[in-house]
Length: 621
Ligand SMILES: Nc1ncnc2c1ncn2[C@@H]1O[C@H](COP(=O)(O)OP(=O)(O)OP(=O)(O)O)[C@@H](O)[C@H]1O
Image (tube, rainbow, N blue to C red; front, side, top):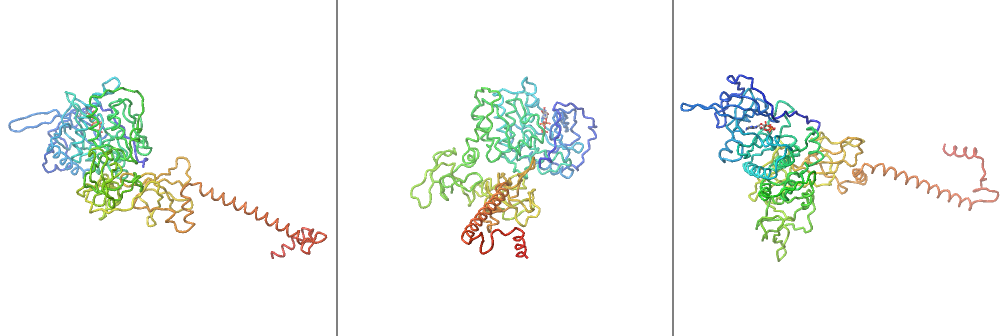
């Protein structure tokens, strides 16, 4: 997969280019769409010069000419001209943009870059927006060390988190959070630019294969954003990663993964599961929430509302900078309960009347200390804190139990978050087994499914529970799978190898290691697997002693040479002891049967070798 990722040079954002085309004869390649609120006549836009260039296109300074019988005006605007997309997809893009535009205008969200509309110039989609003073990225570039003061970062962070949360509540994801997309007006107020473009582009096939990866800007991309249909889904928590990266950059003046190629960033973030480093000395709430933003499993990351809370509570915090200090990862790891972060647990707060069961460890079948199969919440000590205690009534127990809320989970229509489910009506476009991300009390569910870039949404009646896969489980390809979806290694003697699940991605995609294979050098030994294509292998399911032994070989590649060595040793030892026994027996017999003059059994013990040989040969014949 990594080999498909190609670098793409990112030009400096301060490029200056004059528009050379004839603005009066702009070509519109698609038939103008049905008049829609957001569509602007391309003839009314005059591009002047380019002011920036990014992953999704370039930004131009332009004028927008508007006239009617009683007015004739020219406005200064900024135009984001996107890279070309396939002609047949332009219409789809325009209508998706129109949807977004209507949503934004109806909600009148403050804090997003003001959009005038959209048009198509020379075959390229152009988003026409208000012209701002510049971006946070520009401001940082002007500063000596390239970094902002904590109060500014906290103020920008708070304002941005507020607007991103509003967009999330409308099911709009940003997916391209970074300082150059945070625009500033003349009063140093921050506005979110470029929102929604990567989200609208999801599923749109670009003509250039290099553009296939433009689901964000590599330095700011969450692990699932690189291959959403394989390692996804992309959710609101994907923006938490980009937000965290932007805050770090504003604080340190250094872009995350600075100086690394796209390929190297992919390896660091996706394969090696590394996290950007936080600077030391931050207010605790900010440090905690930023650590949470870099959880590999998106379900363990905070929501924008958590981020907002942390920034609000730290508004007046004092920053004691500790250069080069590294606290990355430690806090969030400590704050985990059985593999779940507090951010995960706070996404679903219990209510009186909820049906519950003991929470299993993350990706495991084991419950924590107490196994309550079913109970109902009859009282809450604190309803806002996942660390609080709740009173649970359990069948056959007279008094309610007092349990920690983090050790139990809500069950609605027989389903709980994290359950493995199958869609009852199979869909040809994607696979049908996945992991439940949420089940609401009204029965609506969201599911992460391999092959889907975003969450599947539906009703609990459309899904059924299936056996879960767990970490450490051995799996094999099903016998009817001839060409697996992902590469699957073979054993030495042919036949598919058996592997062990080392990680389960939020869409149910399995990361499988093959400890039974001996690999050399850089040869990969970890592969992805579609949960629908594999079955569990265990000693219980292996029929017969030979199959059981073969399964033993899956545990480590050295089992086979070791068992061969052992059997040779045993055989050799057996041979020696059998030899010794025979010798001893022969000696004993010879003693018993020895007669006078050295005769054995009536034969002379000193027969010449050639005579013995002849006898042996005669016997053999
Ligand atoms: N509406 C605007 N008004 C004024 N300047 C803008 C506006 N939008 C963008 N810019 C300028 O253009 C620069 C580059 O913006 P652009 O969005 O093209 O770059 P990027 O964010 O690096 O890339 P991309 O968003 O394509 O990934 C910004 O840093 C800012 O200086």
